[in-house]
Image 1 (cartoon, rainbow, N blue to C red):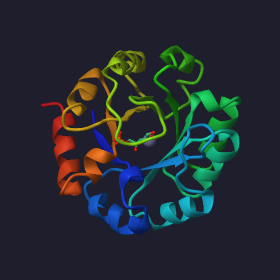
Image 2 (image 1 turned 60 degrees about the vertical axis):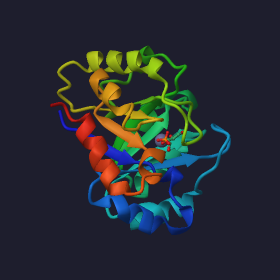
Image 3 (image 1 turned 135 degrees about the vertical axis):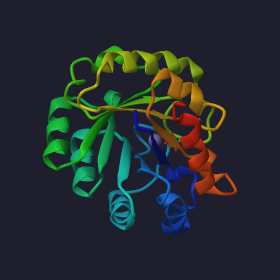
Length: 219
Ligand code: DX5
Ligand code: ZN
């Protein structure tokens, strides 16, 4: 199983993002771009124009995580901006099939994110259509929160459900991923790891990405 490390720039210095991304680009699989609208979550990150610039300037593929209301509009917009992967929140959407089809038609992967309180079973109807499952391991909205180890059961459940996983669906965890939590998430079956503060608070962010990758890689 291949492992992906997707650093989140939420806790990077927004005033010099290109340099911040440059620090980790050569050792990361994708850059995780958190989009918050101050409605679905009580925080705001980037408007669509700024997000489009970030995606355009990013030297590696972008994994857009939309913590926004109205993903029916936002998800295809982020695919059109050039995101390699667009993840929206299950709780925010009313027309999943429409979102999935529109993102696929624009050539991007599509993921569905589940807040800690949302049961895995809600995905059953869509699991054969999506490319990534994102199990939130904190309440979405802020970086630097503690990893919720009680979410590991949901990660295991997702891994079991994927079974042989012939379509190569990614299983991502986001929130509180650090050297002290990543191994438990990997053992539970996650293969794609968001890390924000662990990477950007490290003295050497690139070294931290490599360290996280080593810890997540099965021996
Ligand atoms: C939280 C965001 C995360 C955040 C993770 O709502 O979705 O991507 O950046 O930050 P850490 O790794 O600090 O928990
Ligand atoms: Zn995120």
